[in-house]
Image (cartoon, rainbow, N blue to C red; front, top):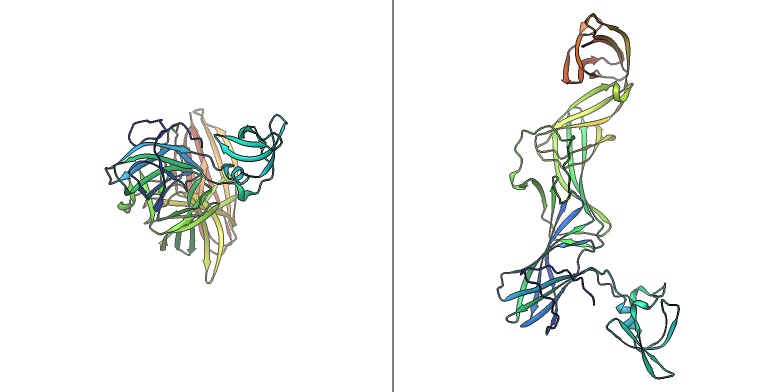
Length: 450
């Protein structure tokens, strides 16, 4: 058996000698905690029990994730000063053909070699990566290196010995003893996100949150506890980046016990299993009768002639990033009306969801005049016509995207002055109410000064 020569040590001492009086032992998994991060990996924390003989011991730890990151392996003896670690090594082979060749010992075989030659005879033994073949005619033994043999394309899978990755721990014990060890490592190919369902009814909403955890490591991970870590941690090799999607600051104190440094943890204290190639849905929270704000935005620079509907609220619970499905309830009926995605949102931060382009609301924006001012600046007059074919009046925020040094000279609907506000350096917002089965004509003048 060949092992990777890189050793991961608990003692800080590297020992490459293999001339030990080795006692082979196996471990029993007592508990496993899985900590899943948003960046597609997890840390596996296990406690295993095993029995050691006095002297040298070699323990094979199996049942590991095939996506294990070997540089993250950590092994520690719990509460026993009589055991000294010699070294810890890792074998990442996912399977071997040892079982196949061992099944052929004593049988007549014909081997196709990589140089197109063939060797026939009886397989009498396997030693040091060689097959020992007896030629019956000459009663002589030929040594054939396993690496030179072309493996048949079709072999009974039951003859393989599937081992998976192994950690081999060599230690020295002052006496025969039962011990417990802590094993930790990181593995790729475990991901999680959050999924939300918002059911709205008039001015209230119910919000249900769930964790969605996917395991494609190649290993069924039975766990005693699973922790889902929300937040963006830094990994070696990361570059600085500017996150332009952060939510507005929150103003509500969250559950302090779930905070851990810069990361917020969500702990599921239940026995379970993350089956390989399966996705688990784990409940997160359920909040009822949340006050909501439904509003409409017309942004001609983005949607041309459509008005988008939006939903705003804030939560007592923190909301990790994920997709939000929005449903509208009417009596006993419920209809999916849109979906949006949120970033990590702390307690009390406003949630702003885009629902859909409204079917009953339409808009048209036209620039009806443009002229040069005496001071060299420019004047532009816009007309926005909003139509409401629905059965209730709606408040619409009309956005105008601007540049340079600008101001609004007036904004009116007929003879009525319309309230407006500067949202930022390049956006003016006009606030209008459109009655059901009616149209509204909004006119405003923009002045650009030099």
